[in-house]
Image (cartoon, rainbow, N blue to C red; front, side):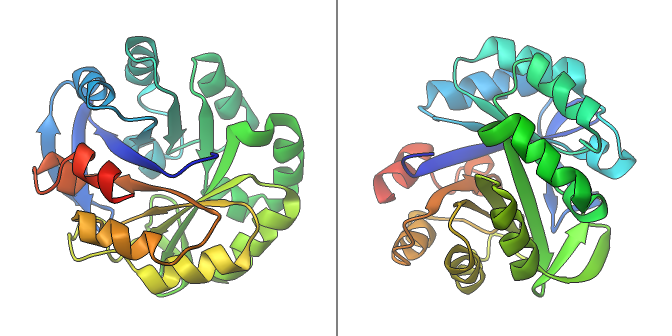
Length: 242
């Protein structure tokens, strides 16, 4: 990403567009039974990217919404990035073949680090690493397991391998509407040279200004979910603040 983008999130669970509290599958709020229509809505509002997460895929360890994602990609002209359940090279290939612009791996980067160098070499900027952390420690498998690995260490390792984009989520703030963990975002940005996209807790234009005030040149965007779906802030307001 060459500019800062506000990226609406579309989280898929059971074929619906939902949001979770702190990534907990049992604490889901459904916002739409039509994820394709939601994607079209955000595109019409001016989104430059869409962030799609296959939540069922993340929890099950394999893609669960391929057909829905394929329809989303076909329905909008803006690029789509996809995460959740992509645990193999074949999964990545299939998503890209379906028209996804960028795939996001998380658990794979943690469990099979020796594969990451090959994936980065093969897919280049079409591959991003999702860095999900709680209290500074990496979480995997749909945030159901917390490792002993400091998030900063994994960020530096991914950066050293040539990963172009890291998506950093503070899972304690995700879906809570309490504001982003600005200090953690700054720490990650200062640890790497690659682009960083912040996710989790953004509720207002003021929150976005706080992130932008960090003046980290590699902070390339922010993913926003619940605040948009509940109408607490508009995509236009966020874009003006950025």
